[in-house]
Length: 187
Image 1 (cartoon, rainbow, N blue to C red):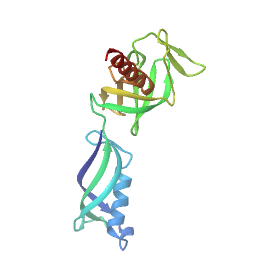
Image 2 (image 1 turned 180 degrees about the vertical axis):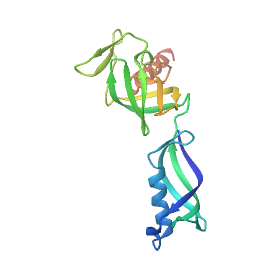
Image 3 (image 1 turned 90 degrees about the horizontal axis):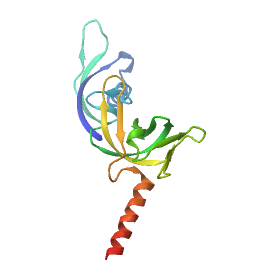
Image 4 (image 1 turned 180 degrees about the horizontal axis):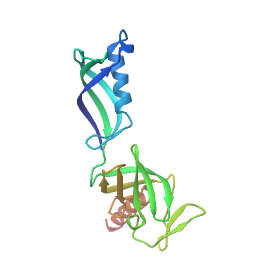
């Protein structure tokens, strides 16, 4: 889930940056510190969007830099359990598919892709359902539910596509058309 946070932190402005526009310097330092980094509480920080307040600089003996309390906004992406996400299949392996959701990849194990026996065609890089003949490959768009999130070290995300309304977008559209047709035939 994408979120905006208001953060309070202390920024060290080195002496070689004195005389430059303070807001620009602080924004640059915050971006270098935060953007692209993973934080257990914030998730993946995508952007520092606005510096709201910069406090008066303090000097610490033995250090020529100034330290400023800074209040700023940032946008991050943090996966939440049970969240429904859409993404693109970026890799297919014998054991499942990797789906890019926002700025990170998640894994849908073969057991969580469809209610069918799945075989892997290594040459074409495709997973194929034995009875349904449905296939999934890199570049396909999918809708899935987050069923596991591990925040230890590099974040790992597990997905399922076996619930109603989930799966490859084309599969979902086929199901909707079938239901509409069945409803029209009843009425």
